[in-house]
View 1: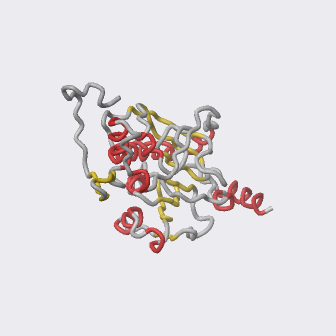
View 2 (view 1 turned 135 degrees about the vertical axis):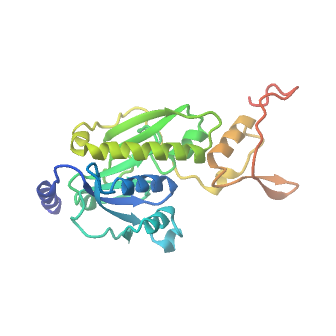
View 3 (view 1 turned 180 degrees about the horizontal axis):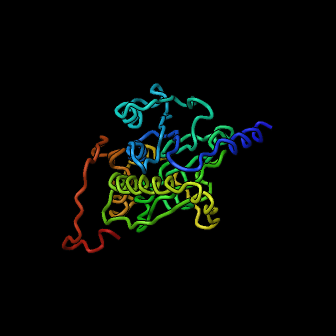
Length: 275
């Protein structure tokens, strides 16, 4: 009954077009790029896309000073601590970027145009909290960004609204790739918001084939196993997680951190070093 009532409210509150009232959900550096783009899109002009922008992020006691919270403070945007989401029924659309929490059906239904998610992979490949890390870790040559519609109860399963591919640069680290995909995702988000009703009408369900998962990476992954990993795999691991967790190894019984690696293509007498 409550869901039907919320749907009825949504039908009566639909704005015909931009500027939109946006509630943004995010936490990290990837999310900051989208948040800044939304704020810039709210500057007064004939093509303004955003009339109101507020932010939901995780409580400081759980996560410390998050990049999104710092950015929102800098931009003088109202901030709500999850699970509080601000005033009910006063936003047209929600936007999620690297938030890491499931949104309930009741919350999603409060938005006349639903909730969009900016996800840094070509879904259904790399569903989950660490798609960029797994893209680099597994040596993918191509990745991209998906703007999708949030569904309750499961992460990253909603229909695709827009998706674009990009080549992964050679020797790229996860941190470098994050910057590329964050800018790409922010631009795609604005394009979707510019023609939101039409974009939603043209959404399509994700393919059932090609699903892979990108679970969160722990510090345990940073321990090098020399007897099991090739040089190429160790370099790939460093590119993927080195900015989060420096790789570690044992040296004469002491754990040491390897802060950087030098890649050499050809070493005389070691033609098979990367095999």
